[in-house]
Length: 317
Ligand code: GDP
Image (tube, rainbow, N blue to C red; front, side):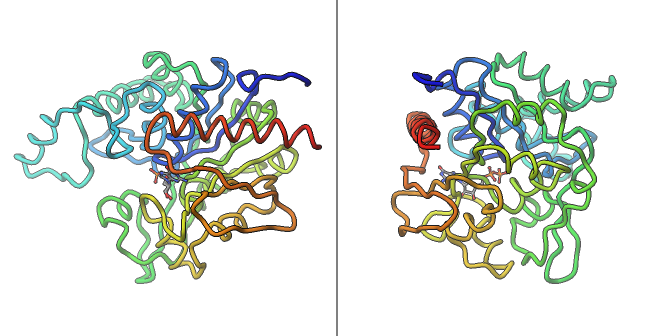
């Protein structure tokens, strides 16, 4: 393993949508084609207008294909909204924004699923059509819906909570009952087992990474791997979305330290932002890097910095 180049590394990234897709793009650009595997949260998936919508898979795939909307982190760039406007004219629900090109993805995915393909196969077919060379896997082919139990006592589907209700209800508990019964895809399991390095992207720990970590056997596999995690919390805040609000509602102070503690069981190295207060840990190595990814150059630089750190870290083992 001497003189190994960064591009030769095999990396598996566990990812949600917005934060996940950013780091995934960085690794895709620095590794030899095919050396990156991405295991994507499907707890946010839902059916809408009869279509199977997989928000995190789409954010990751659009990023890798160079199609992602640069402002929102979801949907496509140069999108048109003819169907959404026509739906509004009809008085149909408009709380979940569906661009025309995005709709084509959901239509084709739904057609593939209804023709008997698995979600893994449908994802592979879409990736091939988008020209994506990295391996993108849904975390499971089985139902694994994330539900949100609110402090008012209601049980909401994830998109109802996040999009329709703008993440306003206070969260009492994240319910991952379906994920507990679901299996990690054999292909993702193999990708994690064969990876030199496993990275938890800076995704929401509660609703993007925990659903993946809840699948049978995955924690056991991770304890035998070198695992890095990147904090999505910077100076006590999330850059986007309800992660910090969720920490507070679940009774935990939102901080990088709390993210580290959440993953401590299997974590080797914790990456947190240069602007954050320094932290140290008895069991987990900590490293401060520039983790705010505004441009593609930022995404590539962070992936490169993690890979370089890993080469040195492994040299010390
Ligand atoms: P979702 O499934 O679409 O909500 O996306 P993720 O869970 O993957 O991403 C949401 C998390 O990404 C939030 O907690 C953000 O703080 C984090 N995030 C977004 N952009 C960045 C970034 O550039 N750097 C870091 N460190 N975190 C980010």
